[in-house]
Image 1 (cartoon, one colour):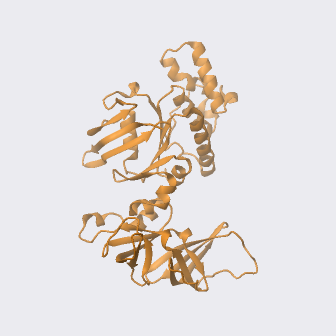
Image 2 (cartoon, helix red, strand yellow):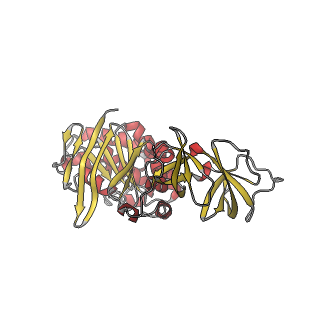
Image 3 (tube, helix red, strand yellow):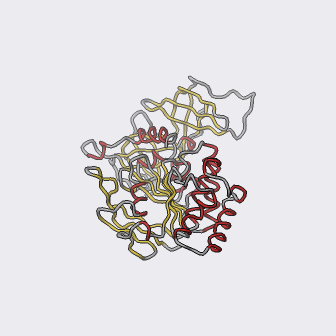
Length: 391
């Protein structure tokens, strides 16, 4: 897939607020690409710049080799679907879908043919005569998609399109959006604050924070190999430990000094140096928990702890384990559940362990560095958990 949509050093301010800061980003033809980040991170501003609703202060936007930075919205080969869907209440489904082609004064037989094709695509042939107030929220969303696609845009922009729907309907509509994308084959640029939405449908994701792009990658790369503390905290759940590189064991591994822990071995993919300040991040599902001390292994970290809380979640149990000043989340998957086996309980003394390859180091700045004044990674995680339930 060729890269055909590019943002080149794009910046945008609103008064004293810098919404987008020198963003450069390339998107490939036909991708389902998501801009993911918390409220106020600049993702919607970037979308509006592409749509032509905002003009960048600096930089330019290239679509299929053409500089469209100065083009008005109606001359750009992009269409936008907003949260509200913006359907015309006085028009039925068929006329809503046909609206763009009628404005373009296309022949009647061509309009009818294209509308029939769109109704089949969204599986609403039998709803064509109904008005928006007579159909469900999910159906309105499908009509909005069809109305945008009928104009054959090169890029379809989706700005939090599922935020108004309940959880089950959002999950179903995500699948439908993915199927429609596969059917039509055009580029989808999807804006969301919900990591689950982005992770489940995207070919690639750009994680945004405070007007900049922290990382671009496929969902597995974003989750398994975050490049910054923000990404590690915002995507999924993670445990963070503050430490310092005490020893470079080899080209691949380092030992970390963390208060209250034995020396911790970690894969050194960031090529940190001795004495560097770091965060160690370990996902809860990577940690094993047991009453008995595991057998020593030169690639495993083994730490004693004390269970402070147990939360049974059906498919898994979540444990909160106290180790010195840290309260560590551990997920134990229920691959088998034996009723006659005594489970780990509140107040039990336990051992937790994880492989050196399952922890990743992230740069931690000194207290004199102004970047430390930002939100700590564990707080980013808390904020993300709260934001996933809001529009």
